[in-house]
Length: 171
Image (spheres, helix red, strand yellow):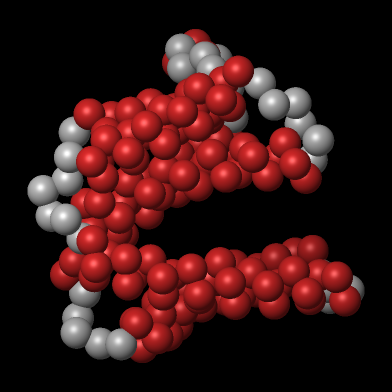
């Protein structure tokens, strides 16, 4: 439990730029709120994987992709009607292809397998690395300044994961 609390604190520190009370006083910006929601949803997904049907990971991914497609198509159609359609250039298609293969399929198959191997509780705590990786990518790719709250968030998340792994009952 201490490890889970530490990783959660690391996410909060990172998302609030080192000032957790600012979210209460000023409100959380939309991007950080989406990231916090995504982390919570993904943790729920990790726990729910324990109850997945006994099908191959690719079959499960195909079912989830089809479900997602059903929700996205109406939104896409609305956007096309309201704002028109602009086809991506070659760089855009390369990004879409990369995102479709690696983060959307390969990483999910690896994650499903990790849940099978180490259990959903232990695997779910690794999802708290997502905002940390996002912050690191912002520093590297967008030239944002690396600040103390980035380091504190990183230490809390990695320390929490280490605690969960060290004291896990299901090794």
